[in-house]
Length: 245
Image (tube, rainbow, N blue to C red; front, side):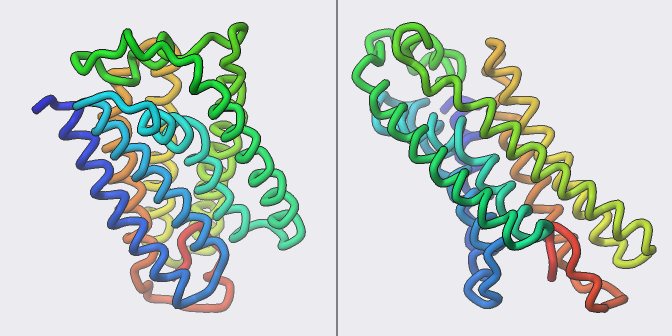
C-alpha cells in the first residue's frame, strides 16, 4: 500500500466526519452557511476518495469526480458558506447564482473533455496529481475546463481565508472568545495549506498534494472544533465569525 493511498484515505475519512458534523448543525440551525460549508467539505471528501481509488486503478468517471470536486469546485463552495455568514443576504444570493452557474458550466466543459482523455498513459505507479496534465487534453486541444480552476480556487481562497482572518481580527479586537481567534487562525492556515499544495501541483509538483490535503483537513477540522467550543463570554455580537457555535 502506497503512502499516497494512505494519505488520501485519511484525508477522506477526516472530511467525511467533518462533513457530517457541519451538516448536523445545518439541520439543527437551518443556517445556509452550514449547508454550503457541508457541501464543500463533502466535495473535498469525494475528491480525496477519488484520489485514493486512482492510486489503485483507472476509471474515467472517478477521474471526473477527482478533477471536478478536488481541483475545481471545493474551495469555492466552502468559501461560499463564509460569504453567507459575513456578507449581506443580497450579496450572498447573487454570488450563489454566479457560483451555481459557473459550476454547471465547469461540469459541462469537463464532460466534453472526457472523450479526449489519453487514458493509455495512466499508471498506478505515479500519483494522479502528477499525471493529469498529460491525461487531459491541453487548452488548445479542447481542455478549456482547465481555465476555470484558477477562478474557483482564487474565489474560495479569498472568501475562506479572508473571512477567517477578518473574524479573527474582530474577536481579537473585542478581546472576547479567544478560542474563536485560535480556531479561525487554524482554518485560515488549513486553507492556505491546500491552496499552496494545489498551486504546486499545477506547476508539476503533484506529490505534495496528498500531504497538503491531509494537513488542511486536520487544521480546518481542528479549527472548527476549537472555534465552536463554548466560550466564557456570550453575546449577540458573537455571531460574527466563520464558525459560530
